[in-house]
Figure 1 (cartoon, one colour):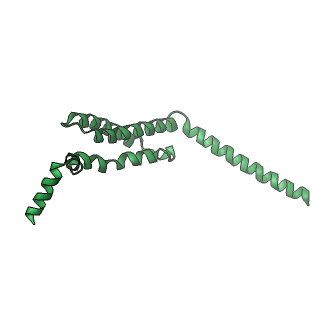
Figure 2 (cartoon, rainbow, N blue to C red):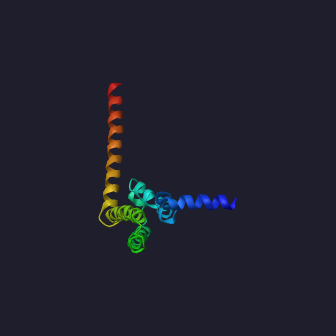
Length: 135
């Protein structure tokens, strides 16, 4: 059995593509892609759910590992792409956070919510008035 495993390993290592797919240079970034995928999906959620501290930490984390991915030998472009996507998504989330909490987005949302409530109330009053007039 050991000879079989050794032969399969030698066969894999002889093929450069299979050798790459069986390495941590490939599987590390692939397993790490869950973070940027989640961040991109979070850009569709309400900005009041964004954590400013976590967004800042993830920006620093991604920038650090973007640098690391190019500093190792051989350069790991897949890891770079993973953290580049995450950095872009986190910067987008950071902008949304600042826009909502610091640049008037929260007040605008509350104003729009109040405007919608006023429109609903006006529609109800109008319907009641029509019903009263039709009797």
